Image (tube, rainbow over the protein chains, first blue to last red):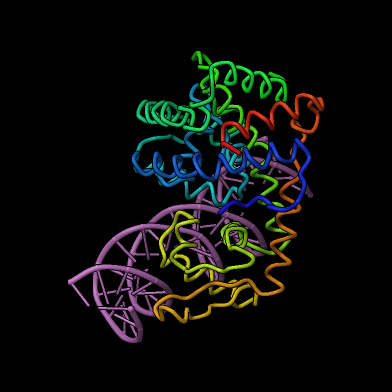
Length: 146
Length: 146
DNA sequence: TATTGTTATACTCTATAACTATA
DNA sequence: TATAGTTATAGAGTATAACAATA
């Protein structure tokens, strides 16, 4: 079953958006769950790992913003990542209230693995012709001004 | 911050997929959370409502499949939707082990509202030219064979 | 015997409010 | 006073295993 309104006439942009949502639901999300599970991470833990900058680290508060959730929530997620030595909390020398989250070597490696496995395009995009794939990429670049 | 590998060269399909993921993360997900909250539904409850067929109803087991989760999980989600009289459990007359989930009038109305609010395309797609919007729609139709 | 859905259990995710330490 | 992060608490989401009813 689809979440699209079946009878309604949609504008081209609305229909494109609806089809992207369907692609995400049917292919992206199952892959996301599978890849997280393979690496023994809960989806929020995997998302936190992805959002952490591999070079600079970031304050708890910023990670909470990136995850669209409360800071008290991030405490628990980071606790579990820290238990597995995937991230470290380092007190910021300039503001000792702030804790910068830094990926460990192992955490950075796991993040690379995650990115690698998630970046493979799903079957409906792979089966498009080479021309169509380039056209789609160019349209997405234009939409997101890349 | 983006979850895209910054230095790697991506194939056109991989880059298109990466940009779609970014669009979903930056626009789709925040909207999804906001709309759910406005209607006083948790995200899983809202997703269950969307996946329920407004006309036919479906067994618990099928909803679990649609939500990519365990049946024991669906029991709790449906309990809460039933407490609010948004869905009903009806024993299937042909197989009395099966319970068919059927939207109530109020549940169907809430589902329509959800669909309506979620179908509006996000700003990056709206600002594309009319030609680009049609081209994007056509490519997505082709990918998903619509 | 096999299948559908529920219950029991344990853990994770989530937000709110109160708190500590620092600014 | 204000801000960063934690803790306490409560409720929701999640899977596994055991279970009852039905096939």
